[in-house]
Image (tube, rainbow, N blue to C red; front, side):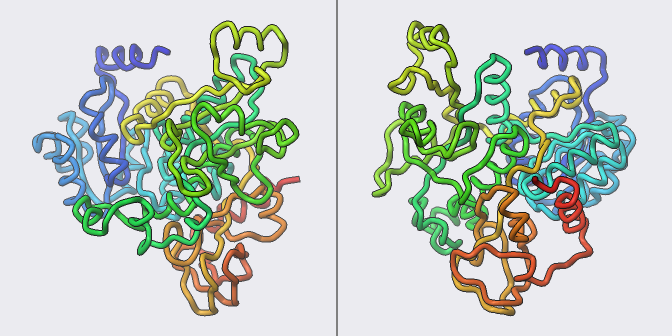
Length: 447
């Protein structure tokens, strides 16, 4: 509750949190927009594959040119300015940097960045949740071994859901379910970058004008991103996941406590203590009024009549039994909120969500029939989407994690709707990401 005052103290003492940002795309730019408005922080350096694009984005969010004229990280330290380059290794190894914000969106690169940052004694706020989804528990373990903090990024929905779960448990409420919202119909799982704008309600011309990335947007639409984020939440909170993928029950905000109950009580859950995603569309495609599409929620249970009566006395909206209550936020502000993670990690030594168990996994699943010799194009592409499964099921089948299904050759036929396994593809086994994933499977093998 006092992060802002701690930041003000750092500013008054001229001892700011020193930050390095890897990746200055859309998410990174949103964080950059807030940095000049936040006391007690100094963005020392930005590493991006295109420094010119990073400078363009800085100008777009309102940075003045003088703030980015430093010609080295050391000069940026002296001047209180920001150095921009392609060299992420120099950024993570600089002794003055306290926190690295990994913001590339590339899961394989993100694993390498995180591991290098840990080895140089840097805390990491990992925006690239795709990496966390396939090896988050081991990344957290590696950070702890180096006595640094690894954290999900506040502003993104997983960390916000973790925050709600922590609120509930700290108050003494058992968590029945938690999750986010989404615009969903079952056929969206076959969506490709060619069809995404029609489902979103935009023309290709509007998307081009806005500079929107169809593959990235399609990763949300086809269910990959909801599965990835639900995996991160499950592995951070210990909540379990549906046995055969997300159900996406349609519901308004008011109906969430009705549907997020166990099946035995009229809801959709296999049991209490699960993650789920609420759809903003009815099964026939009609929009639901007052939806939770852009938000997050947690459903808790009153275990005694006294607590149930308190819900009633304070006009809390519950299910008909009065026992189940949902707290929610209808929106999340993405990169504009990342500063909460940076401050929490640096000033409190606390992550805003971190994987502790391997409960859940996201397995690459065929959008269409795949033939030997075809190349998988990963999240949001033309070939696969990500299906949320319990880690026990994924481990037993040898499921191919979606985060590693990029530029990988198929070696045998896979039918539409079938989840891929390691045996279906020819993997590059030399990457840090592959090695860390396989080590995690051994170290965190589910019972």
